[in-house]
Image 1 (cartoon, rainbow, N blue to C red):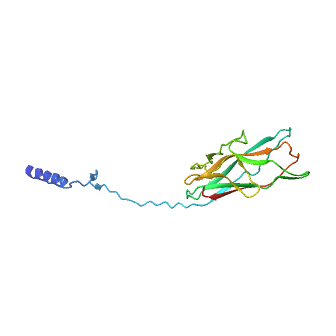
Image 2 (cartoon, rainbow, N blue to C red):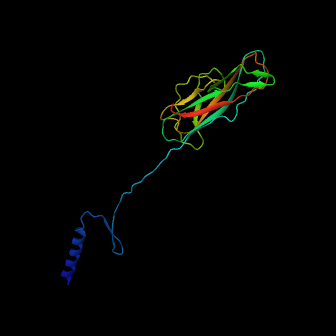
Image 3 (cartoon, helix red, strand yellow):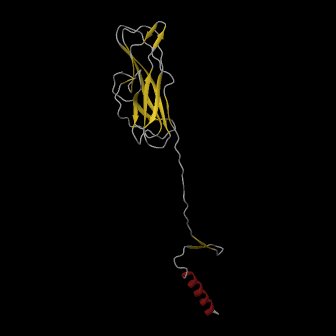
Length: 202
């Protein structure tokens, strides 16, 4: 009888060794569990949408003439949202009608300028850019625009240019709008219309 039990144990050991490199686990209940893995294809379909600009809702200046040419500023952000996903870059253009007054009848003889300085209308500083709230953006690289930019009353002028591969997401530009006021300006309340547009490409 002893000889038979030893033979049975040898058969069990041989059976286990015969499993080779297969990854197995023997549970308390005697069930053999084999490790396994598989792959799954993951697909993300991302679509682009629009390119939009939100210019200042209004611009306003106030000044008191004192016999010397003056400059006053209104610092208001301009927001560009590039959701195209193209990375093509974009550019902003600006134009204005003449600022006029009906009483007394007068046309403003000064200039409207844009730059990125709240302390000087003659600064060569470009408007600084930051990512809008909640937006992981690619900050724009501005090129090809010389500041300060005088806003034309005939046609339009490019006042910001975002290079290809930049300006993606929501971009807030710290734009400073200056009004240069000659000393010989007629005292009045002047008004006009400023138009800002955005186009694809730097």
